[in-house]
Image 1 (cartoon, rainbow, N blue to C red):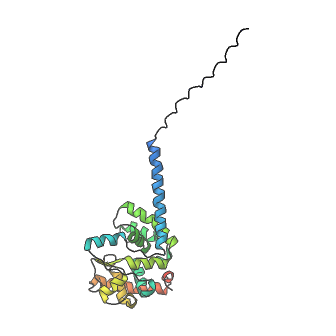
Image 2: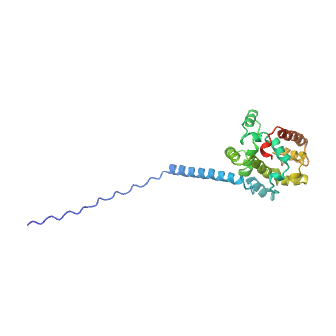
Image 3: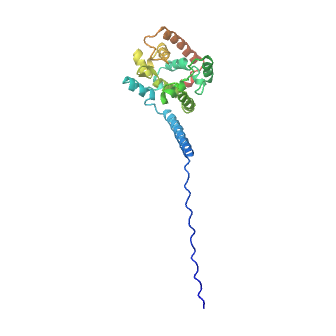
Length: 245
């Protein structure tokens, strides 16, 4: 009887070598750029939320000035401990429509563009620049400022914006905030500032290193009178209501 042929062993098909995944550098780079942009924006928004309740311990500009001059004078005081006329004076001097805009005063920007003059920055923009950014005229900084200002306005109250502004703005070389400025120029606390003294401090902005509140030039004297009138006007017509009790 013929022997049955042994069944042939099935040979496993040879596995095809896996194709190497192509590295696409442009796609990889774009993916990381998106992640960095997302994390940067998220970090900035968290920073903005934090400063709505936490007093800024310092600012990039204050750090730079401390390094340059050796020391700075700055003591935080809540808005309740600052003479109300001081807040009205800086608003009258720097941003009379502070209560009526959402951070960017488009009417003032248009006037500045038409006339070729600066001065369109609102107090909210100045707070963003001073608290988070650096000083300079680069388009990148201005773009960051324009992005962050509406976010600050959306999260902070107007009172908080004024409070932070008065505590971080520069009034002389190494003198930051209204508490240090009141003592430096007039030897009084910020709650004791008179209408004239408050207007003098507002009048030296935005050039505190070139002007003096205690030894005012004719320009500062004239500007002081205009600011006093403006402070009285915005109180009378309600344009100070958003940051006053």
